[in-house]
Structure formats: structure tokens, C-alpha cells
Image (cartoon, rainbow, N blue to C red; front, top):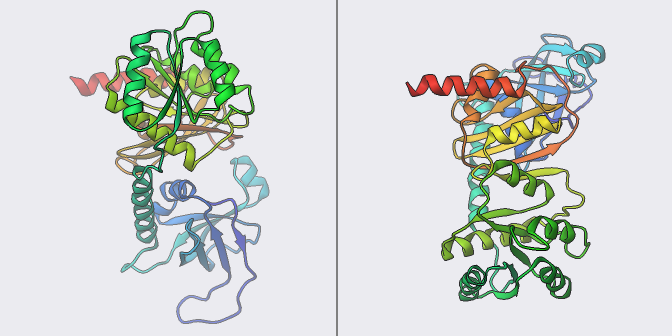
Length: 376
């Protein structure tokens, strides 16, 4: 449930039907926050209101919900199912509040309205992502010590209408970038003297280049190496050998994202990338090794999942779309099979009960065991 819920003063008005003891207002600030609330509570016919205006169990209240768009409000009648005071809430790792059950109509249940809104917004989000902002004529720096690879990239990008600068070494690339401030840098990784990793660190350390999108053009297939790049601020990977059309499409996608969502790599607390480049088991092993805490958001063609991480271990999982029901461990096993989509780790303090109860190494062994059984 949203952490921004506030209770209004109890209403003394009598109405037809149950007496409304109070009205609460809830605001979801983002679609992801709403999706998590839907998967955890709303889809099961209730919600958890963070508030210190407690009502007795069994009392009836009205909840007015403002959805992320800001121009859509819904309301629903609820009954108090349980109350968590400050002490009990602290024991459970939650904020004080009340668990509510919906008393809505069968003709248009509240959960169905929320699901319809999520579907509409998700479809709109995908349409917006597919509509790439105008990026023609961008200034792109291509860095590769192999002339044939460098020339192939230059020809493809110039044919697409981009201005292209070139460099045959990391040192030359740094000088070109400082002088011309390109819109994007496409760089090889394995180069003599100053390799791609060193160039990446030097670029991110310069305020004028800290936000410049960087794509690695590489034959690296090791998950750990790719994770290393994402952690240092790589925006994408393109494998060698590449198809010219794919090269241009991937570069323009990253350029479009940079125009829509400019960010500061130096101040970012997120780890983001593609599951096609880094397998989820490898990602979770890396997170466990570094004892990261926060929420790992996974967006997959089948749905969306949020994994809560504490000291590197998965303690809870919520899942929308296919297979969102079942025990926490079963939901997590489904998610571990995902090999496509995007991931984003937002680091933050995570409290609450550990619903999984297994370290990452045992989770991965259990997933492998189940996969073997399904394959027989």
C-alpha cells in the first residue's frame, strides 16, 4: 500500500447502506507503486492503509484513490479487518496502519477497475517507448582499434544520418569526447594501452561527460564482466559481429532513452540492464556477493516482478501477470526462468519478514532441480 496515505476526520453523515465511519485518501505516485500494491493486496480483495487514525475492527470506511495519472480518482467502501499499532507494526517491519477488505459491487469490483487502469497505462507506456524521440543527426563517437570494425560502424551510422567522430584508442577517444562532447559513445572494450573499462571510468569522472550514454561493442559473454559494466555506468552492449541495422536501432534506442530520461550516473543509486545480457541467477549471485539491499524490478513480456533484497538475499517477491499466485518460493522459481526483459535495482533499506528463507545459492540449486524435473 502507498506510504503516503492520510486519514480524514471521521464523517458523521448517515447514508444508505453501512455507516461510513471515516474517509481516507490514498495517492499512488507511480505506476510501479500501484502494480506492487495490486499484486500484494488489491488483487486479493483488500488494501493496507498506512495511517495513525485507527478505526475499530469491523468499522466501515470509504477510501478515495488518486491514481498515478493524477486525473483519475476511484473510490471504494471497505471494512477494517485488522489494525497494526506502532509496536506490532515494528515487529512485522511495516508502518502502522489498517488492513481493509473491499465491500464493493459485483458489477464493477474495485480490483477489476485497478487492473483495467494498469493494463491501459502499461499499453500506453509501451507505445511511448516504441515511439523513439527524434535522434537523427546525433553526434556519435566510435572507438575501436580495429579499422575494419570502426569503419563498418561509421558507414552504418552515417547512412542513418548521424554525425560520426572516430578514435582508434582510448586516449584519443577521451580527447575527442572532451573537445566535442558527443551525444553517445560506442566503444570497443579490448584495446591496448587504455581499454574500454579505463575509458569508462575516466569519462564518468568528468562532469561534462558523466551523463553521456556509453555502449560497449564487445565479444564479451561473461555475465560478471557485463555486470561490472552496468555497475560502472554502461548503458547497453552490442555483440560482435553486428548487423548494421541492429547497431543503428540499438544506438537510437539508447539515444531516445537519454533524451526522455536524462540522469546523472555519478548520483545514481540504481543498477540497470537487460536480462538478455546478464542472466538473472548471475545477477542475484552478484547482489548476494555485494550484500545489496533494495528492490529489484524485473519487466518481462509475461509480466512484472519486484524482488525485495536484504543483505543480498531475496526476502519477498511480488509478481503480476502469468503465475502471480502461489507460495513466495514458487513465484520466485517462475521469475528465475525469465531470460528476457529489463532489470533495475533501486538500493534502499528493506524491512519486514523473510518469506523465502533461503540463501541465493540454495535458491539457484532448487531452481536447477525443478528445471531438471520439468525437462524429463
